Each structure stands twice: as C-alpha cells, then as structure tokens.
Length: 361
Ligand code: CP3
Image 1 (spheres, rainbow, N blue to C red):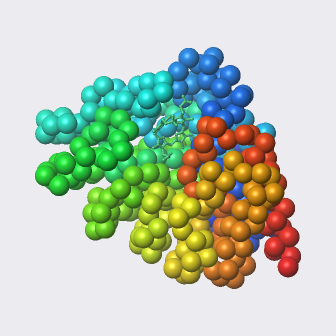
Image 2: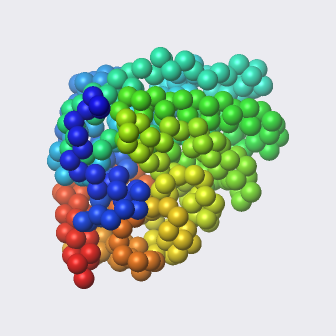
Image 3: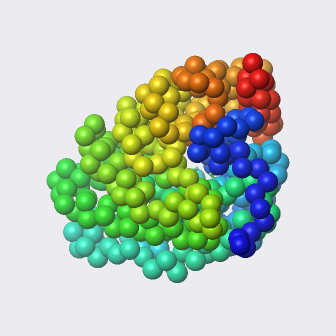
C-alpha cells in the first residue's frame, strides 16, 4: 500500500511510457520561479534562494503554485541541481544578480582527490520536501524529481560558478583527463544515490539536466557527459511502490547526439528548440518519448502567435510518426523570469485543447 493518495491524472507518466493519452500533457522547465508574483512573495519571506529550498514548507508552497494556477500536468520539486556539490562541501551561495557561486571550487589535484560522495542525510531537506510535496499534491498530478548530470555539475564545481566559455573545466578535461574522470565518477555515484533517495521519498519520475553537455566537442560529449549519464541511469530504481518511475534525460544543445541519447537507457529525451520534433521522432525510431521544445521566447509573443507556435510543435511531432502519443510538451529550456504569467495560461490551454482536437482528426 502506498502512503500517498492514488494518482488522478497520469497523463504525463503515460506519455513518458509512450502509452495512449487523451491529450498531450505539459509542464515547463523552471515553472516555479521569479516570473510568478506569488513566488517572489515567498522568496522574499525566505530571504534567500537556499533559505527557500531548505525549508520544506516553503519549497512545497512554491512547487504547487504553478500547478494550481495553470493546471499543468506535473509538478517539479523546487530545489536546485547545485545542492549536491553543496553537500560535498563546496559551499554554495546564490549572489543576487550574479547567480550561483562556490566558496571552494575544485581547482587543484588535492581538492579533486578529497572529493567524496556526500552522506545523503546532508540532503535530507530535499527528501523531506519531496515527501511533503507528494502528500500535499494529494494525487492531483505526478511529482518530478531531478538532478544535474555529472558533467554539468562538474562545470559549476570546477568553474566555481556560471561560465560562458568553460575554460577552467575544459582546461582540466584536456590537461588532466584522469582528474576529470575522477570527479565525474564521484558525481555519477552521488547523483544516482540522490535520485534514488528522491524516488524513495515519493518522486514519480526523474529528470537529468545536462545543461552544458552541448558545450563539449563531438566525442568528448560521449566520454565526459553521456557515458556518466548512462552510468547514473543504470543505477536508478526504475520502479517504486509497484509503480514504474520513468526517467528523462536532457542535454541542452544535444540535438546532434539524439540517437545516442535515445540509447542512454532513459524513457524520454528532452529537446531544445534547435531540433524539429518530427525529425527527432524519426531519428529516435519511437524508442523513447520526446519532451519539448518551444523556444521560451515564444511566450513573449501575442496570444494568437503562442497558439500558432503550440500548434506547430504538436503538428511537427505528429508528422514524425503515427499519432500524437509519446510527446510531453515543454519549453526547450527554462522559462524566462520576465515571462508574463498570462502567456503561460494561453500556452497551457492551447496545448490541452489543440492536442485533444488533433487526436480526433
Ligand atoms: O523547474 C523548476 O521549477 C524546479 C526548480 C529548479 C531550479 N533550478 C530553481 C531555481 C530546477 C529544475 C533548477 C535546475 C538548474 N539549476 C539547472 C538546470 C536547468 C537549466 O536551467 O539549465 C541549472 C544549470 C541550475 C543552476 C542555477 N540555479 C543557476 C545558473 C541559477 C541562477 C540563474 C538564475 O536564473 O537566476 C540558479 C538559481 C535558481 N534555481 C533560481 C530558481 C527558481 C532563481 C533564483 C532565485 O529565485 O533567487
């Protein structure tokens, strides 16, 4: 017996498993965030991003905000990919207007060799939030857990924060590949344990965010990012409480490597807006579900244009195969903080309505 309420809307999970659905489900990367006034109010109350993420009551509140406001088909845990390196002792801070910074980045051999898989109890606040969110969702829609890919985490851990050219992490990759592989091995073990603990705590699907895989050269992508994502996926508990727990993998800028991503062991592949959904479907031969891929900037257009863009994406997926199942509608990357919330409402209704009509034609 599950300790949680039965799921009322399993459209998202069914789409990930490429099963028939009445309509195309959608959620949006970074759906809980600064574009929502109700988020900004709670964020202010918490004082800082980490103050919010480490408080399960507040993290639950902001996770539910977009689901309640828009009627999205999944909730995603409110947290950050950088909680894992923080638990490794790198000292995470979010500096207003500057983004994430680590007090102790990995810049020399000694720091790399001292790196360890963190004790999962350092991340208990995340698992507590997962259980509380799942409880308060009360079976309305499924809850997605997530983590950063081993490579994407390494980018922040070596750079010490965001970077445009990734010269430090690439310098290490080219000049000391064995040190880079050492970091990636540890990250893969940590991410697998972290996602499995989220699944234990109540996450019903998990997603790996490989935001910087697309910064790698061909060949290096396979050795330094994809290889370690496969290693994470192999170790995941793919069912819990008698339910399948699907896994989504998303390499931003990874359109070139779709076939290999489809063979990563994941159930679904996330796509950014550089990829045509129908072509992606043909290239992956129906082996995986596809998630994506509206340009987040499309939400700055008029309602009529947003509806046209939603329709275009739904059609293009349909053109790549038989019917519209196996597609989870999403943006191609995180929603901008400047997005008008009304635009999201237009998108949600357009995707829900049009995808029902398309299934009947
Ligand atoms: O999708 C969701 O709603 C769940 C929450 C979520 C956050 N971060 C909250 C957040 C998720 C899934 C992430 C993932 C994440 N975090 C990624 C991978 C996805 C991607 O965008 O490529 C990355 C690279 C990070 C690292 C990170 N966190 C950066 C670079 C920043 C600063 C940039 C920015 O937008 O300010 C963050 C901060 C962050 N994480 C915010 C939110 C809502 C904004 C900070 C705030 O509210 O003060």
